[in-house]
Image (cartoon, rainbow, N blue to C red; front, side):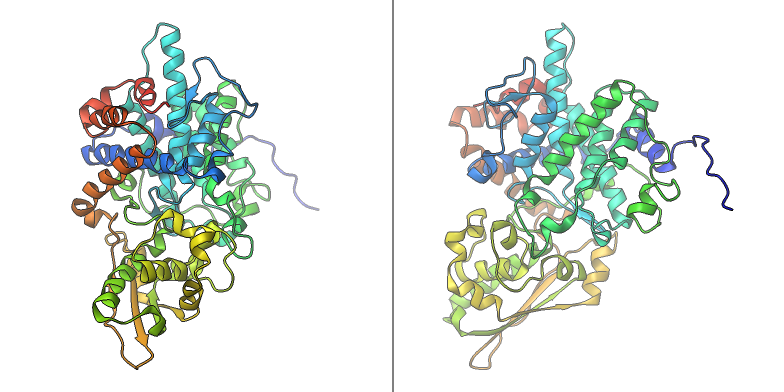
Length: 483
């Protein structure tokens, strides 16, 4: 006869407590983190502005009920929408992620910590407009930057040692978790309420990764983060009503997250929460491509120039060897038909073939018009990925965090080009001095897609000045982006 299960309500799981105490109590002292967060903010918003050029994205934008305008609601940059914070978070989150061009974090789990900006900015803007309507002070953009740093840290630190993809779960689970924590703090939740909110984020339904992998790769991967960060706002608002939480949501025997979804293994941690993730985050500067292929695309660009200089043609290529790391093979080594842009931007062979042929890799290159070029699939068929154990080791090394790829191409006449190796992509911390000026240019380009010159300059005047941006009320900054 089995022993009865105890119905004594336990203390909250340590993981929940650590997240909440960090969000409520950690005093940020890193100027580097704040400066990086500002660069992250402008890059993330710029990615969203570029996405508004794509009908597949804009068809999902706006209120759930057409024509709805929410008094004191959050505004969606680059649009005229003013929405409740939950739907605004979805809008902002979806446009941010649509083109796979915002920041990246790579570890045992990967993901895009700036996805959390959807919930953060929508909530901060709504709270600021509501405060002004009630004669109170709005939040400042420094509050947004600090929330970004903390969301990056929660998502990234959990990702360092815990692989959700290996149990079939999508990394947007961590967006929902991190967004719930920092949005709850912005909403003024008490410590107990915030623990309840974070527990709700973990007890929630979680997305499967199947929409990122063959044969089901599809466009949900472009709005999944918007869904996650908006769900976080909803859960934080529910907790604010006093709704109860679930203290052993992770550790409960049989019914907890660990036993149901994580093969009975508790989360592991490499380091305490601080500002490490924002300081070391990876920016996508050169290419709107899955990050494990960024260095491969850069190497392909170099080889494109060598082809031009040598007089050889891509048609002369008989073999391409891709020396890479394990994560790239697991995620983006893909053969066979590619059915849509979401399929193509997660195929390392495609992301090498396009720059080899055209000397570029832009968002439009994933569309059907470019993909129909028969030279692309012909090149893909000549490629083979080979894992280099040292590349894999350096990928996980916290002092290196490289994302290395190396390409060797051979020709019909028996000749080869020397292998081209790129260990660190342009957006890596080790290449910040080289990368940040180009990141700013990327932002300028994206502003020009949406706004007249005078409005572009007004945004730049604030966005490129750290002190001015930090002091500006959130609602005033968001208003700069309204069309």
